[in-house]
Image (cartoon, rainbow, N blue to C red):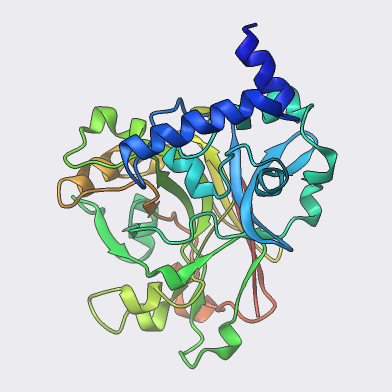
Length: 339
């Protein structure tokens, strides 16, 4: 072990070594310009989110000992740690010091900044993405239940940032004046880790930071008022994803079991290998039309089993009090309650 690394490890208590690393990281960031990736090596095997504490929204990382309030550690020690999930996505902040904090199951992390997961208040993982993109009819069985043929190219639509929501979030459908045709859509969500134009399909997954469980919550009446789906897809809070953004190195995105449960009953069940257009194809396709950026969010489509796919006499729309869980293998369970 080098003397510098010994200094760093002391300083995650963390003394002069991390101060040096913090200064180095800051210098890199200044050289590369605001908002640009620092060129630091991305951390692997990490699950990140934003959590809400008495000090506001800040970076939380899942560990064996609980959820580490990284922003809280930074307030105490001022060693240049990233303080929001978007900082990690963009490679900003002292990632080496963060890696040392997380080493060996976060054995050296301060107990005062570890929170039992059951006590964590989750926030939006990405606060202000440049884009929230969504893919329609991306499973053949879902297209068929609605009377459509599988599309020949991805059907793209978008949500507004006001649709963003999080794990254990609520959606206030009782306050909406829209007709109450509320429906769930379990979806795999990806967040871009770097941007580009004309991204080759063969390289596209290298541009992904990580994956999360999502729910493209939809008002079917608003969706069907015109050929554009925007109204029914962008109601407030209708784009929850979380609880974790799981770094891409941890999963085979083309082979993940996915389910939607409503009040404990399984309503949807599939595997991502059944997508018509893979994540790589979606990224490459979009990047031919416009630049993708780090932090952009993509909902990759839902499978069969939505309420709108039932015969009309069996369509019982969601209502206040209903609890939805999107469960994706190796990624996590996203809980959302209607109020």
